[in-house]
Image 1: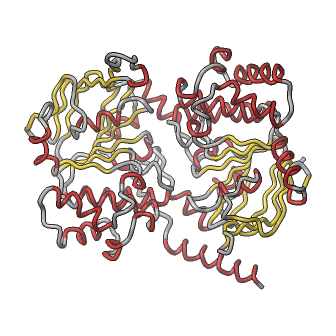
Image 2 (image 1 turned 180 degrees about the horizontal axis):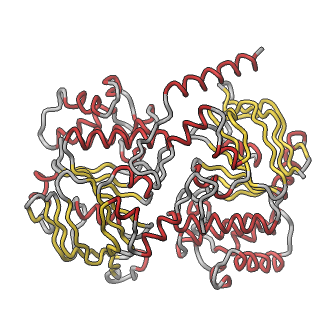
Image 3 (image 1 turned 90 degrees about the vertical axis):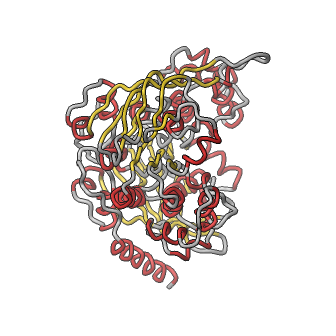
Length: 288
Length: 263
């Protein structure tokens, strides 16, 4: 059962160049798919295109996004927003900026349920408490009444995870959810996301630049360069035998503490030139 | 010795708990740190968030004044020197910041950014800016560009150029690659390694990423809640970590290897 299907998605800067180049991917129920690439590769833009939160300067110029079987591009705007809100949710990168500093935690979790999905307030309240317990937050009643600044970074990220799962979405997009955390907290949070995702059978699109993280949480991945998917792979296969030269170079540039003094290889210019050429050829074909 | 730090304590007011009237309660951040940094060493300072690693760095550069204890820089006790006494010494210890976007003035050109500290210390700028750019592998023409015109890796090189232009003896690098992609990360680390060798620099490298630390540092101190829980040569620390906190840190790192035991 495909919860997210993207077919040949093209996104461009209005009156400018391409940002995403014919991106296709498929995430099924219970599957974790990684989106990997360097900054500017467009990995976050895929998530934003799905959630309908692309910056105003960008527009979708081709392709289709199917959310739980519905092509959201064909829906009228109001209908589309409703559908996305009911089907998909986001776990954002920075838990501090994602929470409103002047509001208590409780209403921030329940608001979406009440305002957008039309739940009764009492039901939303009960659901929020249940979820905070599920993400292992001690004393949920007290936390519901707390302000974001009273909680640690790890706690805040747990709250955003709880909030993302609140309405039982089919798809969750996690955009670099642990980049702001240190390694020990990162481990707890990644575990928690995996645990929640399995229990709820959610499809998860996991955006990250960290190949180490990918190898721990993803079942499959797409490697992006300049908005183009250069390699699509099952996770194990990718780490055992990456096919694309850029994928191999990216792996070689990743530092690992088990490899003492092994000289780090920045992605070589020859690889960059080759992949740039590949993309130029793609653009020529796309225009023809 | 470049640095001798003895029983360093530092506490700061906790402004989040300041009462309406009266002084804020103080939080004890560094709790009795003792360590040396030999000349030419590359010291790694590791710890989780809130462990006090950045505060330690700031105390070493005397951006913060220790509450008690001693910091000796190249034979001079700098622990409680006043700013007038510190200023002539400041040329000798420099810092590279984590986020080059916010530590480079967006309204100044790269040339002006690098020349700033040189002027401040009454040094000749002619030629020095070009030299610094060349040393960090950027073309001279970059002197006329603005920070927003550069990539993240290039901006971080400008940060490095600004620090080395003064020909300091010691550089503190605080999480300088954590915001970069792996590819630019590798370039910046390789560059730093070359500079340490060529200029005979002593370097303290603050990071939460042990993979990066192993690559660069000769000696490592591990901080947890303001205390040194382990100090060891790099190889020893990775081969046989003694403190349980160090082991937890190491085990938490996700390696790009699907078969890593990670529990």
